[in-house]
Image 1 (cartoon, one colour):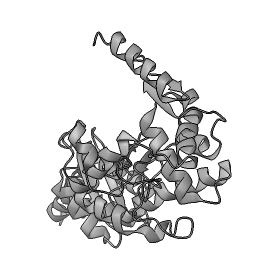
Image 2: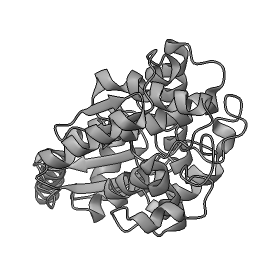
Image 3: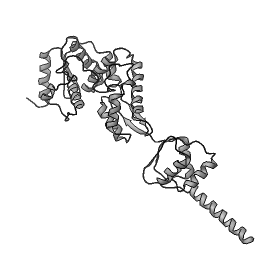
Length: 326
């Protein structure tokens, strides 16, 4: 009898030691281990995924610990494990929902093509799939811009935190929501499509905040006089839509047959050509009062503005001289 009791105690102690080791000894996962736990996963499925990824040692030990913790709720999401952790620490992170966010920065002036690449580079989905969303889910902005042909112009530039449990449409909707907030703050509640289209041209034409109202005035003055806008960024966008842009603009490109080509077609293009930031939106909403009709780079990140072609030609000559050109 004494021998049986001794064997039983040894077995119990061994089992307790095994459990303690499984639970409290830190596990070092492979470098930057990422695990996606989807909504609806059972505790066993979560444990299996963690074990498979090398984050815990035992499925049984994880389930045992969960029972001890009264089977508290475990949150869906993506988790990044990049340093040693005990099983309770792993379980606690998932119970708290300490999920991993992918940071996506959308600079002012990015097109839907740029944003699609940024989404793909962040590991959140394919660029083609995001483009499909951006080009078809116009219902997200239909109340403000019923004539919108895509979400171009309404994916507001900002730094976003997304997870892989979000759909691409949910990501686009978050960007549109940010646009709505800014539009409300600056009083953009009428002629939304026209204003955003103008703002997108302004955004692409200058990076100098103080020049944006003047650039907007140039284009509004041209519209008023029924002059062609002759905006190079609109031609680039036409070629982007056609998949023909090579990274630089040539004289022959100015003849491209597209309603976005403001050299060939009068008035504003049919929609935005990029996603403008707040400054460009405000400039389009409140342009400067000027008689300027032309502008050209001064070679230092700013522009010279002119009221007539004669002044403009002088500015162009000065610009060429500044570049060392004849």
